[in-house]
Structure formats: structure tokens, C-alpha cells
Image 1: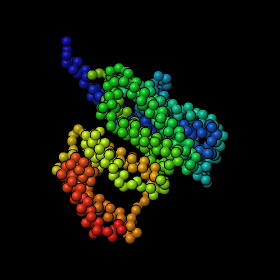
Image 2: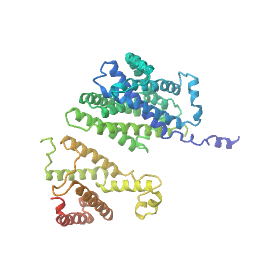
Image 3: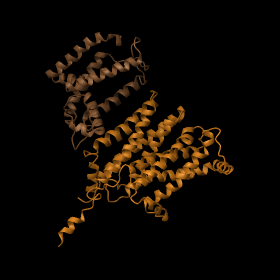
Image 4: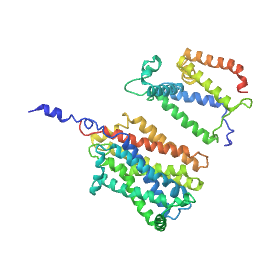
Length: 313
Length: 172
């Protein structure tokens, strides 16, 4: 028997014993993608509900951030690629069973649509805006006429985009912390919550702020519920999943996760939002800022922690 | 109780409540409260990030640096996060969440900020010489009848009487 082969069999730098290939680019993208999905979801939702004029920040102003967030996020993903010049190969195939394929195609559609959405409100946001070419004016008129259709397409794609940021991780069956189907909904809700927080920050209308605050509060409660279930699921799972839950229950990620994500990023802003609803004046930047920072840290922790969980011991 | 920012709790009651907080801290964590330790950890981490060589060579900074854990991984840092959160709650509840610079009418806001900065720097320096501030050395120390705690408390309040008289123009 050639034992030396067994020894060399586990010599896989950056993959075994720990995955060490995803750095800041991935959580930055997951955060920006989730944020963009959240904002687009609310923009489309309130357009479909016919409240575009009442929810000005949601439908018209906050979507300005979306194209920027998506372009920066995609650039971060691009930086992460080993063979950057081959990224186009994602677009030579459609694989229904591959989250990467879903994400690549959804992004290819939703990114230009987000530009179109913002452009269609250019004249309302900046009076005196001139498209220079008659063709662009015609396209604008067409988009404005068909805005409801656009909203329906965007609302569906934004949910796929939001879920995809979680499924990108959960499709990794070799990493027990990520390999849970609750990660998709959890990342979707977290992205929607950060999106609602950004809208609250940009809104000038007390009514809109109050409504988005209420929605954000609900999303925070759902997120806490999902986090609890994720950990309960791990605890009831295989030995490797119990070990991955231990990273948050006494292990090295305990303090950052519970202090910065759960307490300061979810529970504390939720209490502040409840206080606001009870009529106690609250500067919106504090709960909204904490939700955004908490969501950002959450993605870093999940990407970092997931990489050190494994099946082989 | 009005919520316009004018309501303050009775100082004696506040003192008793602070004592109970200290008591609870000893009971739950097995150690006293602190404040300057969190600032110290932040300073050490910042110096280490900006000038790592200097931090390792310095006799003062190097004692808080380790290869395995960050100086920020210190319970006092998290305690201070809690203090900030609690203070924010209290400010929101009693209508005091406003950014303002309170100062004596005799001095300008700028003088107030500069003197606060100088005073704060001296207090930070002193707290490191004394290995603790009003919370960590004086309050927590006195609670366990430590003689250093009693000396610190006497020194802090004794010198405060003296210096407040000398600098009374800054605050009356």
C-alpha cells in the first residue's frame, strides 16, 4: 500500500482543511445584491399597488442606488474570479439546477431594467432633464406607459435576486453551515430589511417613513425567526451541522454574531422602531443605520464562518 | 415627568441604581465595571493598525497585543457598546436626543470643546497611570474595599474640588 498517497490526498491548499477562497468580494456582493433586490421589490410593489406618488422615496428616489449597487457588486464578483476573462461563459448555457446560472441570468436582465426604471423617473426627479435624442424620448414615453408591466417583471426578478444571494451559499453541499435551504429566504428577508432601511433614510415623508418602519419591523421579526430556525435546524442535524452551529454558540463567531448582528443589528433597531411607533421621537438614521450595518456584518460572518465548516475531520 | 429634555432622575436614586448595577455586574460577570479600558483597547487597536512596529516596540501598547486575539476582544468594549445603547434609550425616552454643545454663557462653544478635549486627554493619561478611571478603579475598587479604589476616589474628587475652583470661569 502506498500510504504517502493518502497523506498527499489531503494536501489541498485553501480547500482542505478549510476553504479559504472567498474573501471580502463575496459578502460585499451579497450585501449589495440583497440591498438592490430589497429596494427594487418595494419600488415595484408600491407601483403595482398604485401608490407611486405617495411613496416617492420608495418608488423614485431609492432606486437610484440600485444600478450603482449592482454595478459595484458585480465588479466585486468579477474581482473574485480566478479567470476573469472567461466570465462570459456563464452566458453560454442555461442550467436550471445551478444557482450560479440563475444568478448570472437574472442579473443580466435586472441590472439594465434597474437603469431603465431610474431613467424613466429622470424628468420627475430633475425637472428640465433633456434626453437630447428624440429616440430616447420615445423610449421613455413607451417605458412610462408600460411601467406597470416593468414593475411586475422587476418584482419577480427582485425576489429571485434576493433569494439567489442566499442560495449561492446554500448550494455548496460541502459546507454544512451553508447547506441549509433556509439561507435563501433568510438572505431575501435580510436584503429586504436593509432595502427598507435605505428607503427610510431617503424619505422625506413622515407617512412613508412610518410605513417602511413598520414593514422593516415585520421583516426583522421574520429574520429573527429564520435565524432561530436555522440554528435549531443545525442543532437537530448531523454532527457536522451541530459543529457548525457551535461556531455561533460558544465558538469564535459567537460574539460578532450575537452582539453585532442579532442584538445591535436586529433587536436594538426593532426596539427603537417600536418606540418610534409609540410616539417617542427617534432619529431615523440610528435604527436604519444599525439595520444596514448589521446586514453587512451578517454576510461577512456567514461567508467567513461557512468556509471553516466541513465534512472531513 | 415631561419628555422635553428637562426631566432628570433624583441624583441620590441615580447613585443607588448605579450601585445596584455595579453589584449586579460583580454577581453576573465576577468583575467590576470599567470605561477607560474600552478606550484603551480602541487606542491600542488603532495604533497597531496604523503603526504595527511602533505598537510592538512600545512597552505600554505591547502588553495588550497578542497574536491570537484582538485587543478589541475585551468585555469592556462590549460593555461600552451597551452603555451607548442604554444612554441612547434613556435620551430617546426623555426627549434629550439632540446634538448640542452645552457651555457656560461666559465662554464660547469652541472654548468649551477645546477645554473638554484637554481635560479628557489628561484624564485618559491619568487613568492609565492609575490603571483605571472613576468606574474601573474608584467605583469598582471601592466596592470591594480595595485601598487603591479609596485612594483613587479621594484623589479624583479632591483634585476636582481644587481644579474646579481654579477653572471655574470655564463652567459657571
